[in-house]
Amino acid sequence: MSTRTAVLFVMLICAAAVFAQQDEKKGVVTYSDGQVKRKPLTDELWQSAPVKTEILSGDKIRTYRQSRAEIDLAQLDIVRLAPQTIIDILKLYEETEEKKLKTQINLEQGEIWANVHKVQMETEFDISSPVSAAAITGTVLRLKVAADSTTQLKVYTGEVRITNAPENRTLTPTSVVPHQIEAPHEIPGPVEVSVEEWLYIVKQMEQITFDKSGKIVSKGKFNTNDYDEKNTWVQWNRQRDRVTGAHQ
Image 1 (cartoon, rainbow, N blue to C red):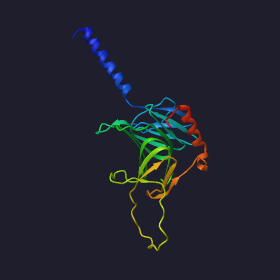
Image 2: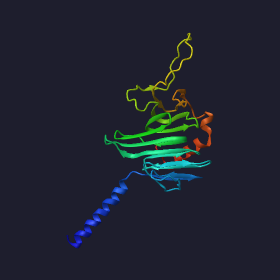
Image 3: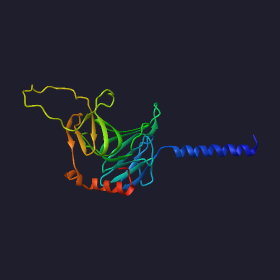
């Protein structure tokens, strides 16, 4: 091999490496206020995560008291962390056996606001909590996990399919809109039963809340005049959506 050919070969290898790196789906911290940290999959220590910090599959991100963060995932989706929140990015646009790009985030504690672009047939975007798993499709949502794992999902646009049995693929989706209840009748005394497996479709301006065992506490409509919708966290997220031009 001539010297010139060898040089060209090396240049091609370097160019291929650069393009491969550019093609790798990554996230980046686009807003960091207060104490925000990242823990890579291969590290036991938490590291400071200022703006422009890269986020990869396997990373954990956390915020502390009076702290907030925003993560831009491959310039496609936005996830924001409220104070005292921990998320685990299990997968970040990773290719599955079915040739789909899958993103999977677990909310361990705290609250997130997610603005997810319209999911195409070849992509999947899932967000889970200690007692549920949700499939996201072109949605703006809030997901909150309390200290006892009580979980609340609110959907602002689009729809979300949420279940307490992510491994059960045979469940029939049910709307969260309340059904007419039966007339009063005599019921037997309390007995111990297992938590029923369910899959609900939560649509625009609907919420669902369930306890630490996965049982539904409440479900139905909410509106922007509710007290919970007037807090600074919601208002800040709405402002950030306008500033960043996030998908609506």
